[in-house]
Every structure is written in structure tokens, then in C-alpha cells.
Amino acid sequence: MAELAKEMDQAIGAIVDKEGKYLTFSMANEEYGIGILEIKEIIGMMPITPVPQTPEFVKGVVNLRGKVIPVIDLRLRFGMPSIDYTERTCIIVVEMEEQGITVLIGIVVDAVSEVLNIKAGDIEQTPTFGTKLNIDYILGMAKMEGGVKILLDISRVLTQDELASVSKIEKGISPLQSEAQPEQTVVEAPDS
Image (cartoon, rainbow, N blue to C red; front, top):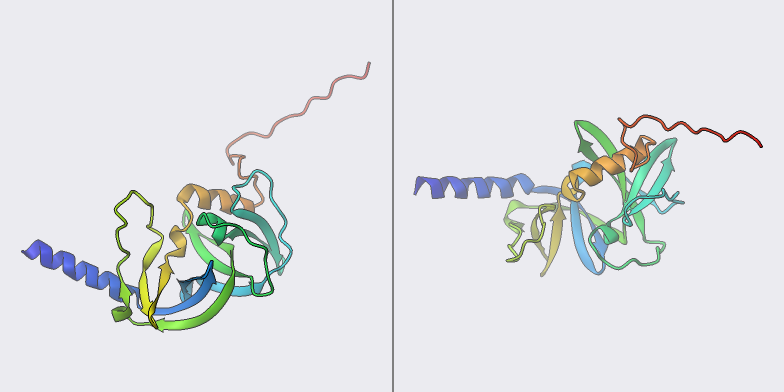
């Protein structure tokens, strides 16, 4: 009985911890939210330089005031079909932690909606879908105006390996090249 009470207190505490301000945005006619404290800025679409040999959802990098920032397309990361970017498409620059280092990453979304103050009473736990889906990146479901907004834990949208790969792009290292690998020496053939 005491164990059940402890679990209930932890569940309530987890929901209360999720209360706060969220930037909401849309993708594929669904509404999502990211905690406002994880967002650095919102920028309009700008030219993205592709980086070879990266996963499909990694669109490339942008030069944001002299800082190179990797950009991922959240639609593709979530397995949604790709669409052409519009004037409402934007990049949300978020901060993520990778091995104790803060990494800036841009995420492409269809459109930013608004900032909402979501109360703990409006947030429900993520439902179990009865399968082995990885839904760790979902903080909870916010019940809003007859609909539901999916609240994301942006630091879990990418796996640790994916985040490490994307952070290498920011550092200017090829995602497939390990930092520990020695440089390759090119030997030219003598002229005949």
C-alpha cells in the first residue's frame, strides 16, 4: 500500500514538473509543444547547406550570425512525409545537452502557433500504445480547447548516438569520422 502511494506521488510530481510555458507549433495538422526554456530562438527558413552521409532527417547546417548550427527536419525524424517549405515554415533553435556540452540544433517545423501557459491539471501522462514504440520523447498530452497538444521532451527526440552525430556536424567533423581516428595519408603514384 505504501509502495502504491509512493508511485502515485511520483506520478503527480512528474505532471506538476511539466507545468509551464510551451511554444506550440504544428506539423501534419497536429499540434506539438516544447518547453519555452529549451528554446533559444525562432528564425524563418534560410538556406540550408546539406552535409553528405547524414541521416535523411538531418537537412544540413545553417550559418546563424557566424555560428554553424545543424538542422533537422522534425517531420522526417518522426517518419512523416516530407513537404515543400512555405512562408510559414520555420526553424526553432533549441539547446540540447550532449555529454555535458550544450549543443544548439535547429528543428524545422511547419508553422509556429503560440506560447501557452499549460497548467498541471491539463497535462496527462503519455498513454501506453500496447506496442514496443519508443515514445520517451513525449512528455505528456496537454488537453486544450477540445483537442490535444503533444508535449515533447526535445532532449529525447534524438537518440544519444544521433545527437552525438549531429553535434559532430556542429563541430565540423564528418558524422562518420570518429574523433579518435587518425588522419589518412594520401600517397601519390610517381609519374611514369
